Image (cartoon, rainbow, N blue to C red; front, side, top):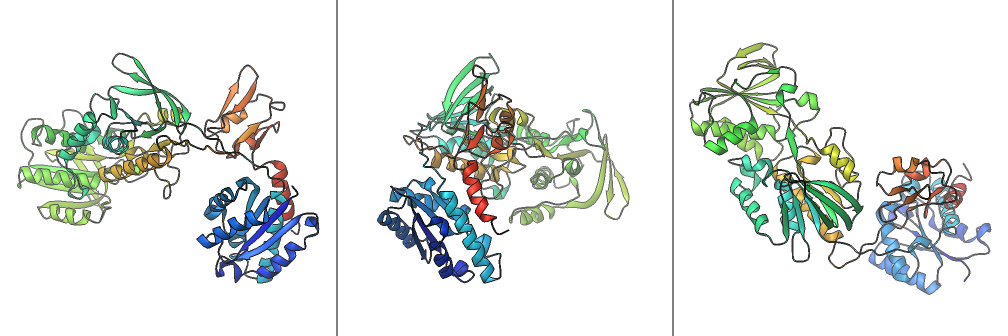
Length: 563
C-alpha cells in the first residue's frame, strides 16, 4: 500500500488559531513539492484533544486508511499519549504518528503572525519528513508479580504494608531490628494535629502481625535484588543465623527512615555521658519508659534548657519537625511540674502546619521562656548562647535537651547502589519529581517514602506511604500483564567493541556485558530509552528505536533549512 499521510492542525481554541494563519498552513502543506508522489490529507480541527476531536481523528484515520499521521498541536508532554491511544483504537501503529508542537514553539513565542506561520509550516514539514522514516514498533506483554517488598518497619513501612496487603497481593515487610515500629514506638504522645496517637501505632503493629497477607522478617536485611517493575528476584539475609530467603515481588517500597545526628560531631557541643545533656529522642524514650524526666541523680530538674537547630547550618537544611517535638517535650515537663523553669533557645522557629502556631502558643502560655539566639555552645552542663543583640549569656541549667538535625540513614548509599536509585546531594534519596512524582525514583518499581527522602513527620510519612501504595496498586494489578517501554536502545553486535562505556552511563542498570561474546547487551524490560548509552558509544553501535539517526536527521534537516 502506498504512503498516505494525514496532517491535522489543531486550533487549540484561540491559542493557535489567533496566532498563526492556519488556512495558509493547510494550503502550503498540500502543495509541497517533495510530497507530490505521496497522498496527503490536510485538515484542521478546533480541539483535537477533546472527546469530539479524538473521535473525529479516529474516524479520519479509518476512513482515509492513513499509513502515517502528523498532528500539529501542543506539547508532546500534554497529549502525545492521547493521540497514541487514538491511533491504537483506529488500527494505526502509534509509532507511525508524529506530534509537532506549534503552540509552545510557534504561536506562544513568536509575536509576528506571519513569522509564526512560517515557522509552523517549517516544523510541520519537518515532522512529515520524519514520520516517513518511522517504523512500526510492537508492544510486548510481560507477566507481572503483584507482591511487594517493603523495606523498613517504621510507621511508613507499616502503613505501606497495611495499605497494599490483600487477598491477591502478599507483602514482605523487612525490618533490620528485632521489633517493628521504628522511632515512633518510643513516643509517649504524638502531636495533637497528627490525627493519630501513640496507641494507634501499637495497634497498627498488631494489625501487621495478624494480617495473613503480610509476612514479617525482623532482624533481616536485603542482600541481593535484580529485576524490574513486575519482576524482582530478591534475596534476604537474617542477621541472627545468616540464613537466606529467596522471594519474588513486583515492586519495592523503601521506608528506611532517618537517623539523628550526633550533636558532638558539630562544633561547640562538648559533653560526656556523666553530664545531664540529652537528645530529644533520649528524653522521649525516658518519658515513655518511666513517665518521668529525671536527672542522672534520679531527681527532677528545676531548670531545663531546650536547644533547637543543632547542626542545621552544618547539614544545610531545616529538619522540619524539631521545633514541634521540643514544644511537646516542654508540655511533658510542665505536666510533671508546673514549677520547672524552661528556657527555649531557638535560631529559627519552624511551625510548618496551620495547627502548629496554636499548639505553640498554648504550651508557651504555660510559662516557657523563649529566647531567639544566633549561636550556642555546650560544655558539659554549662551553656553559652549569643542573643540577637550580640550579647553572650552563660547559664548552668540542671538539664540540657538538644534537638539534633535529622540526617540520612547510614545505609542509604548501600540501598542506592543495590536498587540503582539516585541520592540527593544531602544524602537522602532523590525522588523522580518533587511535585508530580514525589514517591517514585529513577528506577521503575522502586518507591521511597518517609524520612529517607527528606526530613518529615509521622503524618507526612503516612501520606507518602499511601501515595506509594496507590502507585503500586495502579501499576501492578493481579492477573494483568505489564507493557514495558518500546522505544528502547539496541546494540548492533557487529559494531560493539566491548568498551563497556554504556554500562557506566546507564542510570537504569539496563545493560550488562556478555563475557562469552564480548559485547554489551540491553535488557529491554528495564531500558527506558533515555539515550545516555547512544551518546557514550565510541563505535556508534547503539541506537534508540524511534530515535534513529535517519529519523532525527530528516526532522532536523527541514527544521533548520531556512536558518
